[in-house]
Each structure stands twice: as structure tokens, then as C-alpha cells.
Image (cartoon, rainbow over all chains, first blue to last red; front, side, top):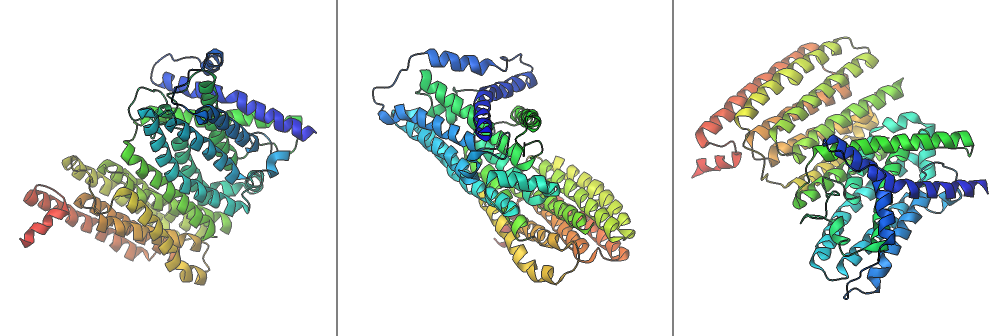
Length: 313
Length: 218
């Protein structure tokens, strides 16, 4: 009973924190660029506003267009239930492993791409095609990076990976771990539409990816998709933070351990947010044709991670 | 103690290998120079690590020399060349960037396969890192044959030298100091000769693109 309470509390926390995280990244970026910037809680206002607005749907759009936001949000929220953001011992930990989390997120991507194609607008199709290119190139990296982690932990189960690294702290500094971290970090930037791959700051750019797909959405549909996008970003941050630097994650279901887990989660999210904001201030967007090169860098990093955790044992 | 030694050495070798991959991914020469500088510093750190855990006092001298020659002197000379040829970037190598990165990954796997019997026969705590050093040697060799600009090839050659030095460090805890000094001198001289060659190529062909050297035949 208690463990279910933790599960529900964790899911609610992740859902609630997600828009705030996006707001913090935006605010940090604004400060780094000497702008005042909207306050970090601005995305909450935006979500409330969007939920209150009416939905405008193109006459050419089919049922798929209306279904997609729910699928996107539901699969992202389902993935959120599986990620060990606070505690390791949870009833849903056995339901899905790292592969399930990644492919739930991919399911959301696929539906978003379909929804981009559905109304027949030129921009949506371009966005979908680009998103699928990026996703197809990022996929092998994700699989290999998971493989590297699973090899050193002996399991693809998220809780097991966390527990294994907690038990052997030196493993966090092994090259397999570090390389897999670097590979997943690049993939995180690509999959959540961050700067070297996609520009999250605008929807007025010809080379946009995520914004091009959701251009036709409005009202509560748009709110759901934006919320799901924020949630995806938070999930990637939490995965990077808790799988590779697992200290602080609650192993036992005690109030003290959970409070510590919450504090450490916030610290980890803040650190990764600062890194992403710095990165986004420093680098320019890559040309679309150079994105495969960036992703092949991450692929090679993941390949090296696998070799060093498998062959060099 | 040995576990810590093995882990540190593997970490440093991986860092050296990753810095070698920078040549394949980036296009600007300044990035190559800084990658080479950092790789040399990592190599020096590896020498110091092996010296500390393997109780070889003279490896500290080697580490200091590495920092001086490859960490400071050669990068400065490279920087001077870079300022002269700054406009010539590696825009169209023989093998494109994405393919070369995948090839580099395969080469590292090949390095593992080649070194497998050596690693199996070795008793040293450093044995796990030897395939990575072999990978660095193969990747740098690939840089030398797949890039067109003479300057990139020079940096690739220097990294090849670093890879061989790393392999010697890991496989035999370094070679005698006298030999090491000879190698340093060789590397420096080789680099100076290559530098003169690059300048000559530039003067004759008004580019450092080695593709143009084909014209000699016509």
C-alpha cells in the first residue's frame, strides 16, 4: 500500500515539475543572454491558458489528428511511471525496463509525426520527415547505450541498474558508463528537440522540427502536447541523473530517504538544466545535413561504451 | 590497489581515444590542435599513473617531457601553421564524416580483436587498456589516409605517435629512458620536417590539399 503511494506521488511530482523545468531552462537561457526573461513558472500559465481555449481543427484532419495528443501524453505519462525518479522499490518497477521507457517515448514521437502529416500542411510534413530522420538515427545509439548499461549492471531493469551502481560506486567512473552517458546526452538533445539539432525557442524558423509538427494544434491538444514534451525532457534529465549518478535515490521507503531523494533529484535536474542552458547559449544550430554527423558521433561513443564494458572486462 | 590502477589506466586510454576521434568529427584546425594538446596531457598523466603504481621513477621524467614537447612545444608550432593556413578547412575528405566515424568504431572493435591474444597472455593490471591504445593507433592511421589536407595528416601522424607511446606504456611500462628520449627527438624532428614540407606544398601548389599532388604526373 505504502509503495503504491510512493508510486503515485512520484508520478504526480514528475508531471507537476515538468513545465517548471522547461521554464527554468528558458529562464536560465534568458539570463545567460542578458535578457530578463519570463519567470520560471511561465509555462504553467501557458498550460492553463491553452486548456481554457477552444480547439480549432483543420477540415482536412482525420480522427488520427484528434487522437494523437492523447496518445502522446498517455505514453509519455506511462513512461514517467517507470522511471525511478525518487525511489527504486516501486510496484511498477517490474512492469517495464529501460527498453520499454525508450520505446514508449518513441511511440509518442511516431504519433506526433503522424499527426504532423495528417492535416496535409506543408510544414507538418517537413517536420515529420525530419523528426523521423532524427529518430531513426538516434535509435541505434539508444539501443547500444542501454546495452552498455545493461551489460555492466547485468539487467535492463532500471531499479537494478541504479542499485548496481549504488553498490559499486567506482563503476560510475568506468569508461563504459561515461561514454554511455555522453552518447545518451547527445541523443537526449536530439530527441527532446534541444539546440544543436532543433531550436526550441521559436516556431518561426524554416528548419524547425518539433514546432513544425505541432503547428496545426491549438487549445487543449496543444497544451497536452507541450506538457508531454516538457515531461519527456524531464524524463531524459531524470534518467541521465539517476542512472549515471544514482546517489540520493531512495532505496528504502522511509520519509527521510524520500526527502533526500527529492532534494537530490531537484539538484540533479538543476545541474543538467544549467549545462543544457550553457550549451544552448554557446552553440549554434547545426545544419540539418550535419545532424547525422552529430548522431554518428553519439553512435560511436555508444559503440565504444559497449566494447569497453563487454570486451574489456 | 590494482583495480584502481586498471580503472584509471582504462579511463585515461579511453579519453585519449575519444580525443583522437575529434579529428574525424571536427573540421577546424584549432580543434585538432587542442585535441592533440589534451591527448598529450592525458598521455603524460597515464605515464605518471603507470610510474606511481608500477614504481618506475623515470616515468615521471617521461611525463614531464611529454608535457613539454607534445603538450607545449608542438602545439605552439602547430598553432603557428594553423594561423597561416586557417582558411583551409577539411571540407571534403576522401571519406565523409559520418562514414569515417562508423569506420573508426569498427577499427576500435578490430583493435580489440587483434589485441585479444596479447591481453589474454598478459598479467599486467594495465592489460585491459591495451586494445584502446591499439584502437587509437588504427584510428590515427585512418585519419592519415582518409583526409586531404596536409595539416590534418600531420596531426593524425602525431596522434599515431601518441598511440604507439601509449601502447608501449601499457604493454611494457614504457621503454628505457634513452630510447624514449630518442623517440621524442625523432617526433620533434619528424614534425619539423613535415612542417617544412607543408610550407613547400603551399608554396608550390598554393594549397595544402594533397589531392593536388596528383598533378605531378601530368
